[in-house]
Length: 427
Ligand code: ZN
Image (cartoon, rainbow, N blue to C red; front, side):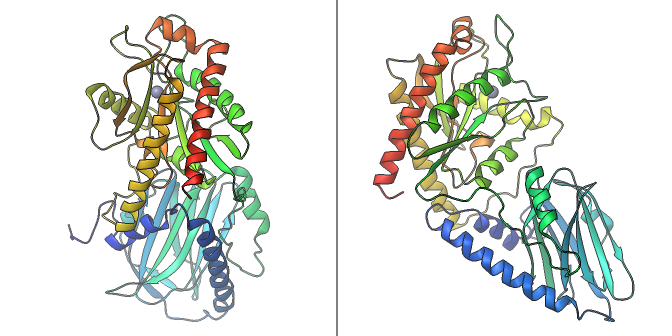
């Protein structure tokens, strides 16, 4: 394998770009607006230039690749010369159409085998002066990037970055595009506007849908129900704190992959991510709450086993574990990650402090392991095991409304304390 390839079929500089596209905590909110304006300008130019691509010699597309997962997928196509392109979104079934100047597709079909968000990818000539690519999607998506970049060695590459989106947002994009003017639909952020000074918390109810998680020792209540009930309560409690806005990654009994949970948190500009669980252990006598933060190296065997089990969630639902591109040593990303990690640890400490003397904790209640769902490099994240469904006493508490309300209140207090400190530190 060419040593410039960094796995997943993407070249090293493409992987680095994905890293840089990730939101950096402080300055990023302004930057995003600037880049959106830049994109609109590019798209406006494209509209003008597409009129002139009639009767050209076809441009050779000499290689192509797809990478990513069911939350974010990138397609890259290399061309001998700079291609013109226009993007349209189409409904029933949901598709993205890329109209190109005359092109000859000279790469093996296997290189564009559908994966991630795309279930079908077709392409071909439309006439003497145009070609078309059609991407049929598994779920509503939007392109967060669509641009032509210059290759260092040969030609140009068309880069398309698709990200999962809601049905409502997809409908919004469909409505706002105009086929007659051939304007490529700008990947507008039609999501909630970032309100300054609002601290946003993603509350993630573990498991869901086909992935039921653990089940109660006595009542057999599935973990996915316990986590959703608690998540609702916690979000409600957090929304009562001034300056805090909480949302749920899933609001009902549906399956979300781990990568989708993280992507939803990023799309809604979360400042904090809290994943809720209530797993089982082989040792039935172990009980109490645990707070986990991310670490490549687990703090202990129990934490390691738990992370392995949680990371299997995607496989359970028939998804292969193919997370996004591998991380590459990138100084900016590395600094962000380290800063985020420090914040995650601070939050975990706050939760432990809130719980002490109020809620049962296991020995060494702050532990570390490699949980996929905690991998957002730019959002401080913790995983809270509220207790163990394998322990009958814990199970009783987990199903007790009054206990849940009290614990939700304590977590909300911890978040509020954490937020006040991070605001005071200018973070
Ligand atoms: Zn779990």
